[in-house]
Image (cartoon, rainbow, N blue to C red; front, side, top):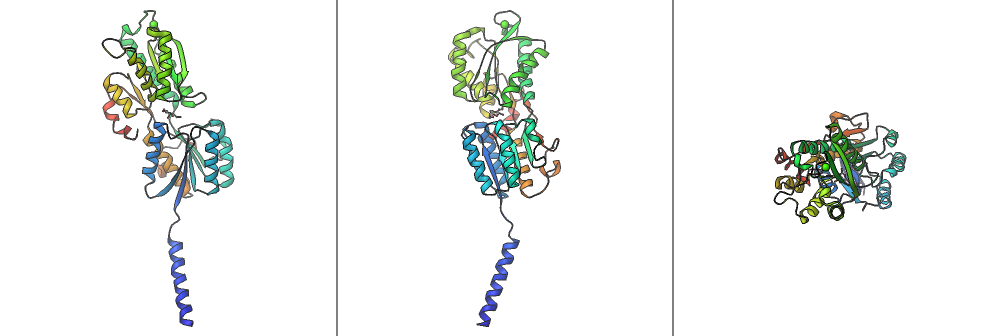
Length: 340
Ligand code: GAL
Ligand code: CA
């Protein structure tokens, strides 16, 4: 009997030591605004790849609805995950999410859809945003069109010295939509180019929706359109689909179209001569920086530029630079766009 007890005692001792030395698995929640968006699915793939066997990632698809995303976030909070990466559906919901996270002591990393700066003053040191400075991408689009306009006098179809354009926007209220739409025109005017907006429309970042909107714009304005600005590549490609049906990009009929993201389909369009240019929206580095931040905070460490491998600004932001992509340099971007 006594011997049995001693054996049991040793068994328990061994079990306890195994449990205490076995490190607890790191669990990170990741709430995407919409899986259907190809740019976002590219980021998801990178986050999984970065996590490898270091951490378990629980993904959730917000389906473009804040209420759906709130339910997913509540699940993450209830499950006591170690940190959460949030690609918020609606930026006006950020304040409430931060307050809940603070109560549960679960750090947050926002990505791609930028919180209002005023919300970033809550719970500093536990709330970060990883993204790119949206105005820069708009400015680069404007510079690419300006360069084309200056070297192609025939681009001024009605010869009035003014660049008539249309613009395809993503979503109202989204920082990328607002800033890209404003700064592409700012760059034109800083290049000394007078411009006139003929029309604009929201196509929710979608190729199909953009094709429909562009088709309508073409039936209304036809040849009066001298350039197309698009807040992303998918919509630029949709515009190109509509333009092709109207005979553009064959023989001498050309119109400059610019997008943003540098997806592999967009690079192909640059190669084919349909898309004038795009801007690298570096999903690889954005997703990697977001994972590193979430992982460091999940391990109860304080994030520093050293331990996450990216510069942290104001204790809140990691900014990944944009890059202009044109027919001169697109080849080198195929490798970077492998996730899209
Ligand atoms: C942008 C990107 C778009 C779309 C959007 C979603 O940064 O350029 O393609 O994914 O984010 O908010
Ligand atoms: Ca003109």
